[in-house]
Length: 177
Ligand code: GDP
Ligand code: MG
Image 1 (cartoon, rainbow, N blue to C red):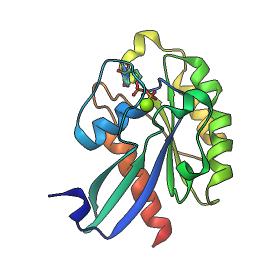
Image 2 (spheres, rainbow, N blue to C red):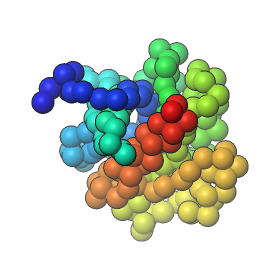
Image 3 (cartoon, rainbow, N blue to C red):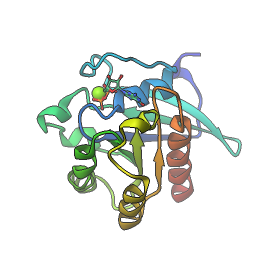
């Protein structure tokens, strides 16, 4: 039924971070609505969406915040991060510059959240292997350095989208139990 009326055992706020154009909004719409939009346009309207998953007999509700395009202007405010328990740190495997800027995003999200924040590194657009600029090896090295899990996703063909949210939510549920 209605999202607001849905019953759940846990409610976790998750934030999407990463450069503009890496596919954050489409990862969110793929996960919450099973929708994908080919047109590149700044996020409009809704700033967050929610979805429930079941895990070991418990309902975990994710409230997932999207940037509404502020990341273009380096203007994400502290309220975006406030209360976040997890983050997907997203880059585009076909644009190396989006990988090079990850430190900035890690530092920003860490500065506004609790030290135990769960983060997953997400290399999106893995359907574009023909245009790959970021190898899996260098992403794995970065993830090891940051001590966070790493997955490649495609919001276009659905690869691993459900999985990264599930991994993140289960990791948060484990540490909050
Ligand atoms: P955001 O700025 O990070 O929110 O990125 P968007 O979700 O708006 O996506 C930017 C562009 O990349 C759009 O044209 C999308 O259609 C495209 N895009 C997003 N995810 C994927 C993906 O997994 N594969 C491909 N090929 N394109 C994608
Ligand atoms: Mg967006």
